[in-house]
Length: 139
Image: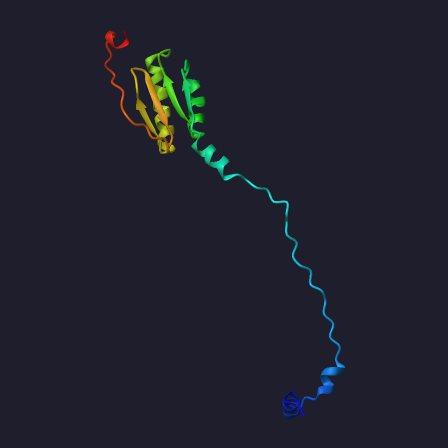
């Protein structure tokens, strides 16, 4: 008697019990792999992130501030020239833009007599502009 048969006899299991049973196994389906996945280039995302724009504005009426604020909210910087506006209107626009800039953690800087640079968070502005010009500076 084989060793396995001795153990089976000891535990009360005979070989006949195993031989009489028929086992059927069902084939398990392997999971389907989706081969139609979209691939996105990381280089394109980096390029889009690094592509910062600066928009130039020369408002004439107070309602033009909406277009400037929209650009700032779209993560674009804006240079605003107030030379064609009345002083009171330009002050109102600067106040509005200051609130917009505060909301997006940006900065507003005066870069000329009536010219302001508005930048959203993420823009780095280095250097300064001297506001005292003489006629000899332009010759």
